[in-house]
Image (tube, rainbow, N blue to C red; front, side):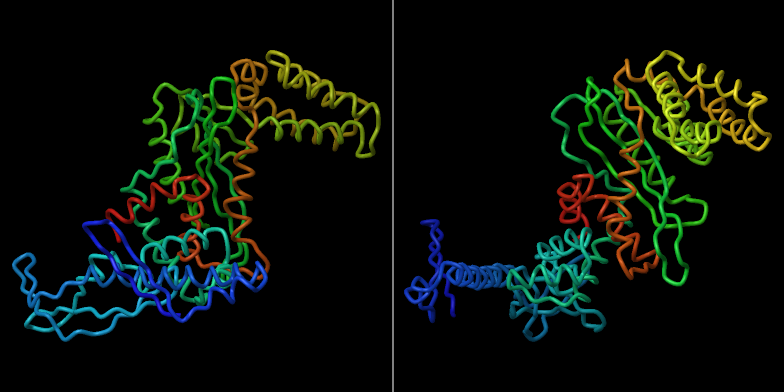
Length: 430
């Protein structure tokens, strides 16, 4: 199958002629085989059009002048580039100074071919796909579309794009589309989950979320941030606080809520950076402590008495103003009860301490009345979606640097920031 292209600029027309194809025979076959023939036809035409675009971008001047430096044209050579429609070969000129050394290719500079042999659109598609799938899966996926690429090439291309995401994140403010309704509340949360590292077993990676809510308490969108395992979590803290600062600057009138479980490190970070935010301890973690206290008081065997006690105080905690005070009083009663042995009293005392320590962050009736979120499920789900779903598949082992590149691409994709990110790649980096 051969393709020729003829354009008439003043008439704004293009004629594409395909030879060595039998369309009548294709029409006589099954519809499925016809679709396959169309796919092959579109691929062949796409490859010819991209080749035409590349050829029109090449420079052929004898010399180039830039920053006081003169570059001399070398003999023409063939460049091989990979596109969404397969490989294309284009004659291009390389240039070199009179002293020799590195060469430059104006065609590659003009077409922003900075991702090895991949064209920009192919690099974007590969990195977008690798943020969700393994390179082997991407290779199989593309093969069904008629594009043959090796997993190693796919991985290498995605890594180059991912490293840009890592290197430029402090300079680029990539944004999600503006929510359809007005943002009234910003809820931030953070949590950790383990990933398998090469020769290090499992270590804790971090996930942060920034969720946007309207005036009725309905979640509008979520932004994700993450970092591979690191000592001290400094990189994650920098990414998280910078991301929150950008969002708060965008919505200065929105209420800021910080949500977390009872982990000491989480609260230390949140209270240190956001002392004016509304701190809320995840209700479901609080309810879990209440359930464990019920097991200590009434035994681990299911019983109507235990269920009734738990349901009563969980409802009180969630729905009554300052309901946590009632929970604390009942736990004090059982901690001091002579009917419980010393070991059980100690367990109850542990849960009592938990509710006392976090009582100011457990005013759930007030939060609900103000249409504020009381659960950190968004962050827990973020750990699974951002990290577990991509980094903890069977047999996987990661290195910190290569894993971080893919993690940042995944965070950008899940945060609906991809178009903003890629626009900056095309403008500043490619």
